[in-house]
Amino acid sequence: MNLLARFRFRTGFHFLGLLCLFALWAIPRAYAVPPGNPSTSIPDVTTPCITHNGLASPDPSFVQVKTGFGPASAVEDKRTRLMWLHLNFTAGMSYERVKAEMAPGGRLAGWRYATPDELREFFSHYDGAPNGYSKNPALEARLQCDLGGPLGSFSNPENGFHRTSSVGFLDVPFDLGHANFGYIADDNFTGPVIDPKLQGSTRDTFAIAHIASYLVREDRPGWWHRFWHRMPGVL
Image (cartoon, rainbow, N blue to C red):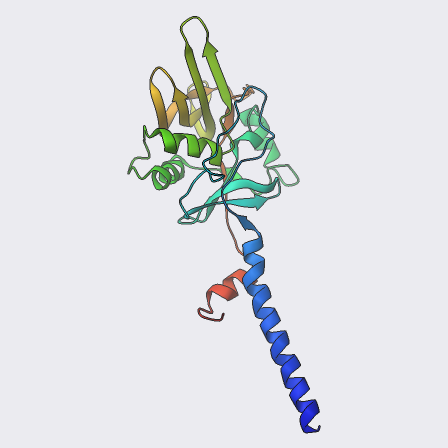
């Protein structure tokens, strides 16, 4: 092989290597988008979700991610690597129906119910309170947006009462059927609140528009993402 041919071969080989490294860098990032307005497939009882300069949460520890339900259909807590499905996808579904859809081939296959401790930890990471409880109005509004809410809007013209809220099932048997946890609300009488604790119960067969399910799945990155993070300083 003459000198010119050898130079061309080496140059082409190096270019191909750089192209592969760029793909390893770019592909994982294509599946994470900045937090923004959630899916518009929210029940008619809701009010529009207000974002803050196009970002629901300015915290880089949280990012909206793509799932089988579409782009920006779950919010991921990077500290736990848990993806939380937007509540609007299970709003109005009974506990029994959600469990049935989790079976292989169902719309929710691969998802599971969060535990009470996981929900408390998620809220705690989001609002900075050790117990996850907060009365911060900006954080309440952002969390509603990041989780695909609010799910319900309630008003009483006679006394001026107005509330927007979200709440969801966990797989915890309690009282009437299964427990409701994770109350997020803006109430003009009692103020805004983020509260991960037990709120009550709903019968397993009841489908209520403003009650969803807190579902999670672990983020398992592809081999290219794992490879990339084992090679610091490649680019």
